[in-house]
View 1: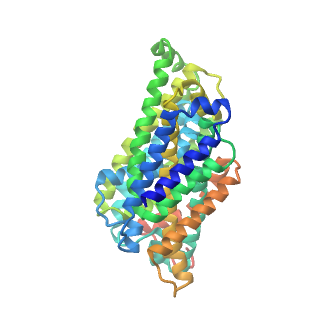
View 2: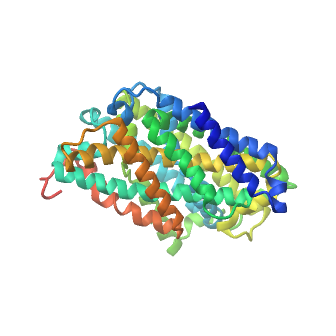
View 3: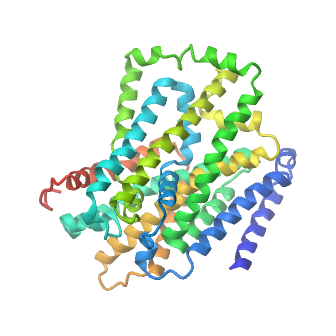
Length: 439
């Protein structure tokens, strides 16, 4: 296994060396940056592979031994929730739309976590012996609904997985001037490898590593930009009295406010997607789940507050930046040798932590809820789950390679799950159930 890992990273470094023919690559891909990136990827792969050794059963592959500490469960919840889009979409939208969007995103997501933990999870005693949301829906409404849930969940997660792969590819291309899909393919292969091999144990432990990484990265980046601003305190004070960060924005009501209200409702309603539902099933009991989601609500709010502060600092430094190019501006302006590798690692941690969780949850749906019912003679096993995970990962990578608008992809794929599964699932948790035919 160590030889395999070594060959993988030798191939990775050889590839980057081939790209060092132009002058920009010679300047930016120096030893410190490559060391930071290589160390992070190697550590992630080693942790993931080691965690997945000697899996006892498919149940352990799907939900572990249900002995995760609350801190680990909280970190996994946050790592799954916070995608690579935090520094692409959230940062650019905070910069562009200002205080209103900051408040509704922080408030909506915070309430979402509290509702999930303190209102929903606490009512899910009878769900904790299941392995997936598909099994829960099947027990409530029958095998046809179980199959529909599995298909909806897999299609809905494919979009999230492919978007994370796109973000990884864009970040590597941006920081190291890499052209073509090779960088994305290499990074996606790593995620698919440890997620498929190690199951939820590997995903959870790498989630902790990735959570720590991006939790350190975001505030450090904000501090660096703050240090680059002359008279930073006075300049920020001026920005906070102008659009879009002045408090008048909260009072005014226009079409932008209506759009913001729609976003608030979207953030507010728990979707209970396959990966987040899986985090509830991984808990020892409903009380640990409630505690973990409560902690996650507070930490998520703090992280979004730092992202908002980062947006304020960027607007202070330059109010005329193109919102969609903020990361490019950060890399070009503030990323000296060493920091560039740190920025890449931070964004990749956000993207990888979501991709691996969604990939694992989707493989469980495919194996336990779809193949098991469509082919009753097929034996459900860890090997079959690994194959399913790898195939779903390849499908997500193929979708990512097609390119296209990431926001549209999110909205399209979310439509496969929320209207179909979330609505009857939420009603069932609160005790309102209809017939299988109506569902």
